[in-house]
Image (cartoon, rainbow, N blue to C red; front, side):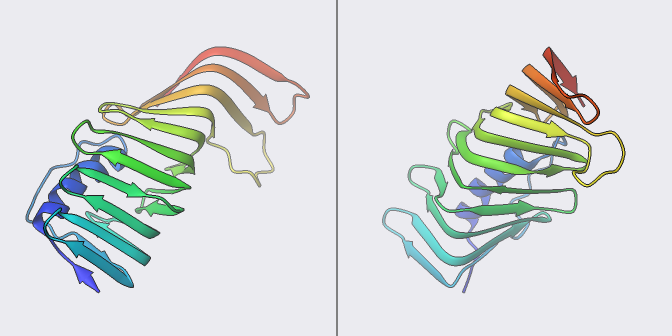
Length: 193
């Protein structure tokens, strides 16, 4: 089943472009198609509520989101993905346990996000989404592949802040693991990008 609606499309674009703009300000075009497909889609016109379930697939501007359930409330401008989801494009791929996002305040929450942005691998037990930043709590990141035979590193951070429009990370209270060292090095702050 395929749903293509202007209200849903425009509000969802704001969410997708902020969360996955990936350091590049993307243009906003309401004429671009957004496709939502699922095994079942329920729409309540009176309260502007859409629930898509089972094999949910959303695509727009080269971004793809796959999950088992999407709950969109237009009257409250909120999006909820209560189950595991995967978001990807040609440059990045992320998975998470759940997502809640408020389109009015441009804020939200993701549980257990893991993935890669280009060569940078990122994890976060909790991700707080604000208008201008993503805050990863209990995070780690590295630009090394796990199966690399060369020297590798990973930075574990209590708080990692990503500024998508600026394209950099600020990590605070960090522990640096380097493959040839038997201990971790503490680094108070680290900027990457």
